[in-house]
Length: 259
Ligand SMILES: [Ca+2]
Image 1 (cartoon, rainbow, N blue to C red):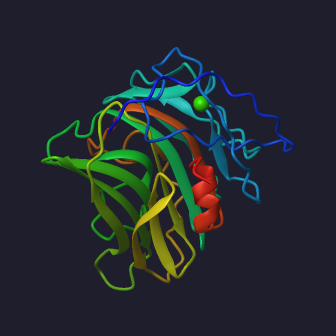
Image 2: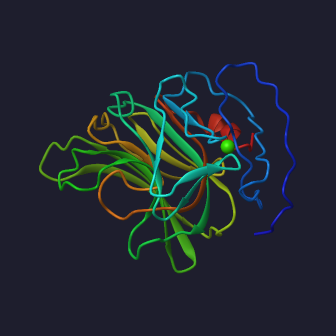
């Protein structure tokens, strides 16, 4: 993929108090320390449940007080979250980050490497403990995993099992993603369909009609699985948003800066 030159700062005047920062994707983005372009193409209607631009901190800008704490050497620098395969951001679930009938989760990411641990995905957004066989602690997650030249991009959601086994839907696609390149990834769920988007385009979907698991005992994490498994991401993450409705395809395109 062609590497474009770093972009300059983009001045955007916002008419809303909560700014959802879109991102420039699919191009050679800035290195940490450079000024981060914040095109903010359009604010989706409705207030996000959690929103992080990592411009100096892991504060939640949604007004919902889901402020993040950084662990394992994760830090914010140059307007992004830097996790190196051992670090992550975490925030507690007060009951509004799970049990969702509809939702959107989105983020920008730039990997140093896609697999930190052999055979384990790198989790970008996780509300997913991945520890119990019946998956009552698993709610949703976005992850990447490289095999050969292709990278699996995946969205998973879980509902309370009606039998003994896990009740889950997965939207999965394989793409030739590059380390060092920014991508925008998003998942939406509307109690009818789980959809996965990359750089504003739908790349996978899966029908599902359940209310997703509610579990306040499991933290929302950025950069690793919410449970004990070594499912770390190594790279940069920015513009993380959790919203309690499913954005439309057009809204996802605009959020990805492609509208
Ligand atoms: Ca940022």
